Length: 63
Image (tube, rainbow, N blue to C red; front, side, top):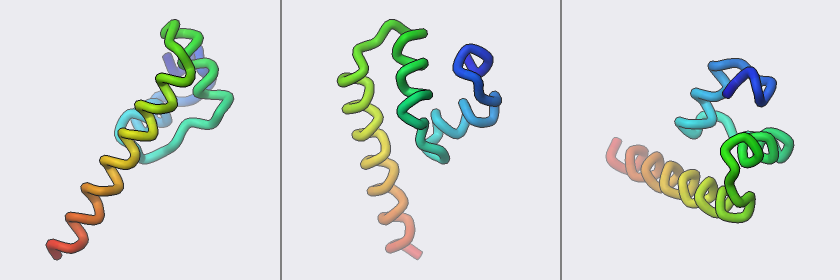
């Protein structure tokens, strides 16, 4: 996947964990490779990052 998108394996890992947001160009390549609808992918990606943000805020409050 990393090779096909033109990024490192570390970048792919960061995309998966929320440590790095893929660029529009990377998203286009990902949806093309996986044969996904770009709008649906973007909605799910947004939901993922919102959940990640909520979890981090909760962890900060608990400290």
